[in-house]
Image 1 (tube, one colour):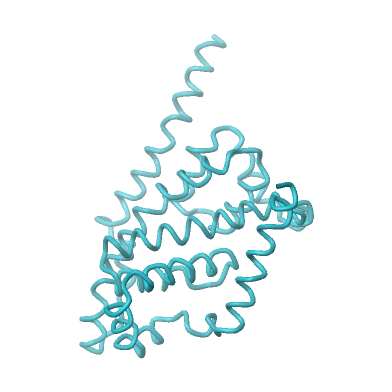
Image 2 (cartoon, helix red, strand yellow; image 1 turned 180 degrees about the vertical axis):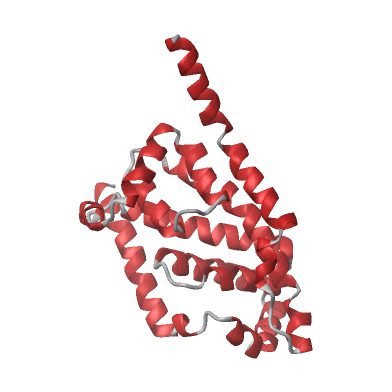
Length: 234
C-alpha cells in the first residue's frame, strides 16, 4: 500500500503522457477541430453512448492532470456531444478526477520536489486551505481567481482528506460546468450558421453574478467562525 501511495499517481501520469503523445490530443483541443469533426463525433456518440461518455471523462482527466490548455473546449464539447446536463456531469467528473490525480501526486515520491519548485503564491493558498479547507477550496472553484492547477497543488501539500478536496471541487466546478455545457449544447446551430461561438456570455451579469454570489456564500462558514472566535476572545 505504501508503494502504491508513493508511486501510483506517478504511474497514472506517465500513462496519461504516453496516451496524449500517441493520440496527438494536444493538437485537437480546439473549437475549430470540434467544428470540423462534429459529424464524426456525434455519429460515434450515437452508436456508442456509454463508451463515448467514459472515453470523454478519461480524456478530460488526462487534460487536467497534465495541465493541458483545453479544459474550456472539453466542457463545451461535453455539452455539444451529450447535452447540457449530462455534458456538465461528465465535465465536472473528469475535471474533478483529474484534479484528484494532481492532489495525490503531491503526496507521492515527487511531492517534496514539486513543493520546492512552486512559487510564493502557493503559500497563500495553503494558508487558506489550512484555515477551512472545504470552504476555501469551494470558493476558489466557484470564483477561479487562482489557476485550477495551482489550487490542486496547494491543496495536495496540506494535510487534508482527499474526500474534502474532491467534494469541494465537484460542488465548486459544477455551476460553471453547467453554464459552459449549456453553451456547448448550442454549438450545433452556431456551426451550421457559420458564426463564431460567443464565449463572452460568461461575463454577462445574469451569468456571472449568480456564480460570484455562490462563491461569496461559500465563505459564510469562514466568516461566522471568525466572528465566534472574536466573541470568545472578548
